[in-house]
Amino acid sequence: LAPAISAGTIVVETSTVGPDTIEALHDLLSPAGAQVIDAAIVGGVAKLAAGEGVFLVGAEEAAAGRAATLLRANCEEIHFLGARGAGMRMKLVVNAVAHGALALVVEAGALAAAQGLPLDIYERLSERPSGLMRPFRHRFVDRLRSHDFAGGMSVANTAKDTTLALEVATDLDVAMPITEAAHGLYEKAMAAG
Image (cartoon, rainbow, N blue to C red):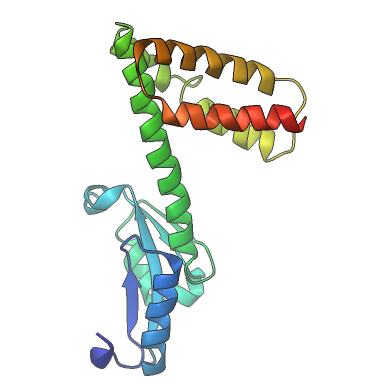
């Protein structure tokens, strides 16, 4: 790749890679006068092909230049995150949530199925505003980010609820490693006061 690069070339990396890979690509190509921009895709290639994807760009919009115009024309939403590698860093955060949530949703679904509970109701309850988005919207955005720790459900009650779920799972031989990990964090929080 490096021999084919000339001054003024813009290389846009959209693969999900570590920020160190973006830096290595920059170190390889910048001596030839090329600019490396990370533009991580959120939503997948199919959404991007339909014009519904999101780009997370590791550059300021002005610094992205012609690449910004090209990217903007091919997505529904674009976020310029400043520093080189920041697009990939944010993509890794988003993927951590998506992949962790998937594992949790599957293990909770397995617990529901093992008890003969209707999965369509599990699905409906998860889709409600009080379902999957509540921990993010209410706990993280409304409470944690604003340092509002007054009221609400206590850590002790949360640990009690995860204990009950884990007891049922154990009785039914349903593995719940994500819930176990969360429960361990609640226990540590209680121990710390």
